[in-house]
Image (cartoon, rainbow, N blue to C red):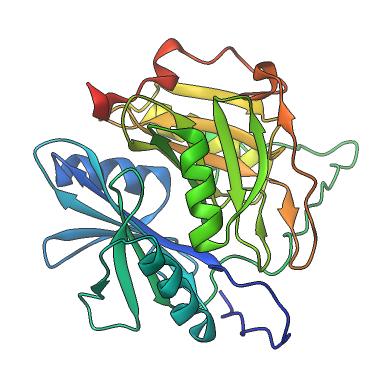
Length: 313
């Protein structure tokens, strides 16, 4: 992955440019290693912590720590160096405590309006600067189009696209992340779910929030190269014993094709293809959509447990 350079526009808006990583506590690292390796990620144990990367670049997208139960540990955003002091001043103006980065990097940590630990660090921009091109090559007549199952290639997600978090108060959280971190609303569906994007060029949603009785982690979404890879990933995970989930389908808000695989702790990992993209400098026309647009355009009905916040039980 090429590292994106800091833009030089004097009047550009101030806000984070990327979701740098997230971290979870999970009760069994061995099971987590099996799940995410099967999903197609590069999973390595480093100093007692599992680190999730794609097979295409060395960026660490997620850290899994051992804990008594699954829970969201922290999220961290990347920012340009000149924006860091401005965002820190916004946090301090809220009366929130600010801690130095524990790894000695240029950045700081605080707790958001739900009590979630949030980091802001000077880091390379890991969201893409443009939407990946898509193509469909029809198979000429007289030729076989699909490989035999035994020859099907393994699916390797290219990068983390977004995460979705539970929140106690959707409107308060949207206001907080917009005011403090500069994220912008892409779309929402009533008081159910809302999607926010980073302002320097990013997918339709960098982070999304869904109303719940408590904060928590719902899913992480991983970009793949084709709708065929979405289906292949679902098939391979089912073959490995990870058959519970939801898909294949297409979302309305974000437009991406999806398949979600349920992890051992009630949250999900999503194979995602062809999500909408918001270029830097473009004002996305956000809207408040009816509830029927909050989940899918087409696909199977979502299982009842899909919307349950197991961290609140």
